[in-house]
Amino acid sequence: MAKKPVLELASVSRLYGSGDSALSILKNAGLKLYEGETVALVAPSGTGKSTLLHIAGLLERPTEGDVLIGGTSCSSLSDEGRTTIRRSSIGFVYQFHHLLPEFSALENIMMPQMIAGLTIPEAKKRAKALLDYMRIGHRGDHRPAELSGGEQQRVAIARAVANAPLLLLADEPTGNLDPETAAYVFSALEALVRQSGLAALIATHNHDLAHRMDRCVTIADGKVIDMKI
Ligand code: ADP
View 1 (cartoon, rainbow, N blue to C red):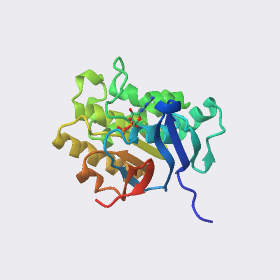
View 2 (view 1 turned 60 degrees about the vertical axis):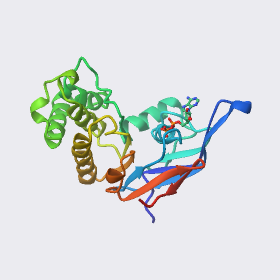
View 3 (view 1 turned 30 degrees about the vertical axis):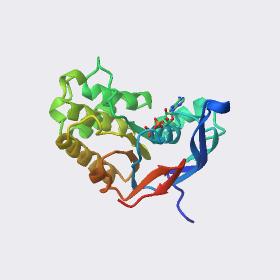
View 4 (view 1 turned 90 degrees about the horizontal axis):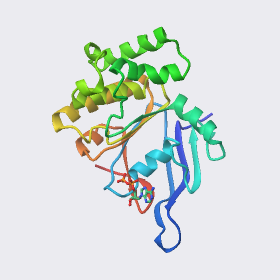
């Protein structure tokens, strides 16, 4: 039997507002992402990248169409059902780290695992391993404000994969970093994604970084289309 995509957007449309002022951002957009596949989403500002990522991450509902995560249709699920899938199957990295300022790097990575039901020692063990993997094991006790931008983003990436999701969604994860740090952080993200075999959809303006993904897509006229770069 053919493998089910980790993420499928099926004829997804998203309309903002109504009437004459309605803004049609996605129009019957389709996308499939399979296990272990890394895909860059490269499109000009305002074309709907964040909208698409929010819909794929079950943070926003499409106006029409369906989102399937690991083959499960999410359109008819309650908000609670969608939250359960989001917590167990999807990791998010944003342009800004969104770490909890009053907690240490280690605690920030432990948090989603404890919400998922792991014990403190289990969560700590995995958080430490992830920090080591991201080469910031020595910064575990530091709060976000004590870390550099690149370090904060590496903690955010570790947090996103802490619950071993099926899917990683990243919205300009290196957009706020200088080029050298961006390249370093992106490499760490790529290594983690490839090592863990999860599917990743990464919005980026950086064509050099996008080029390293298995595939590049863009948004044109509300549709997701393959892109040669
Ligand atoms: P991108 O991430 O590619 O910059 P976005 O998905 O953020 O694009 O936004 C796409 C378009 O939708 C923009 O024109 C934006 O102003 C509009 N938009 C986004 N969110 C909303 C909203 N909640 N209400 C109305 N318009 C929105």
